[in-house]
Image 1: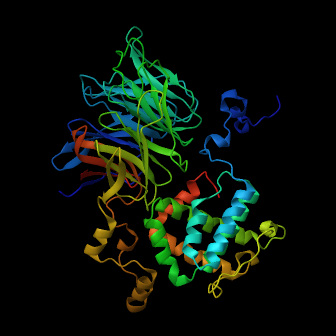
Image 2: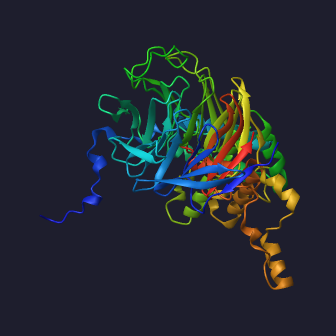
Image 3: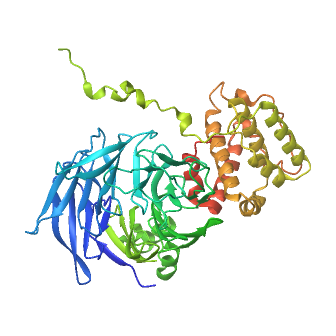
Length: 366
Length: 190
């Protein structure tokens, strides 16, 4: 396992980050701007800045093929940014028609649509209407009862999963007539008009759902909730109860984000500041190992942080030891906000990137 | 026009779609009747008298009355606290470990954590008159051998609290901060 690549970009919270498909371009949110970093050698250098939003940006996503960037913000707007031939990023405003902050945005895998979750208890599914030369949105409303915290697309670009503060993870159909081809039937559903609810899941304790993700095949749904758990749902057939709902609780703090690295492997990260790997199948899931384990780091460096030691140092030397005392033993020094695939194909991710409240973007090997 | 602080108008109240009953959030639990929980309490007390504290604890924690009313929950809290205070300090960790490694182990320990917090909350409120009056109908039973630590929690002295705190310490050692987070998150209250 090679060492992690650490990029300390600035000392502000990164709510979301996204790499281009080739890993050469990185977009990170910073207040009401999005900063673009280009890879130059071993480091990332600031190359451009997308300004236009007037409140904190909550999410950013780079479409892997077209390279278009979509951003959404607490100012209730979303912009699609396209690179003009002159090398400038041109924004196009998207009418979301929401009256609360937008919280998350993701391109569909075919890149014809994107979904924006919001505090207005709706998900705006946006698509380009070429007659009007304009991005328009359709609302997924029922039965959302609270803020949408995350959205994730099924590989078929029609089904959409959303995690919500009302403690439910839901699967919707975001089928847009005229844009989408009729999808092949899946275990989630066969006929899928817009706003069909294909599944509504809750874990046992009812923690609000931070993040959702479909497995690479799309035949399972994973979500992380605020009760420090990872839940995986295997649907059986349309309108039937799921085959299996497996919840793994952990001893640590809650996760905020998850990534399916393989069909049988999930990486989750959050308030514990380091990623954890879970492995399993329909028959059961379990914690497998830590990445960037703080306990192992502690063994190597033998740092002493107890109050007793601090006072002992003060007694012996008249001062406390270096500033090392307050730093965490993990690479990230604060909550990890998002975890994303960096290298490898869906279903065989070899490297992933994480962004944190500490302003770092770190690339780990699985 | 009169000054209206429009920022304070609750616009959501005017939205008919906004009805948001709390029970939507809560996973459904079957109702638990008073007689049922009294039966469990009786069963646990018999186990205690046999000296089988571990079995009593396990049984009590296996049937948290999520769907019960206040009286049912209060009665079950009494039962759990009684068992907890009858277990000696040295036995806490081994018992916990066995509970945790059993089937549904982490769930059982989470339930225990809920009772620890509820016990501590109740303990604080216990000094105010009229709060601890629910404790009727529970006879204080002294388990054999448990008496040196067995301070009846309803009496509101410092002893009961220290029992809860040492349990808390042991549970965190075993189940980590996750157990605390789950107590705060969980909609199924005990």
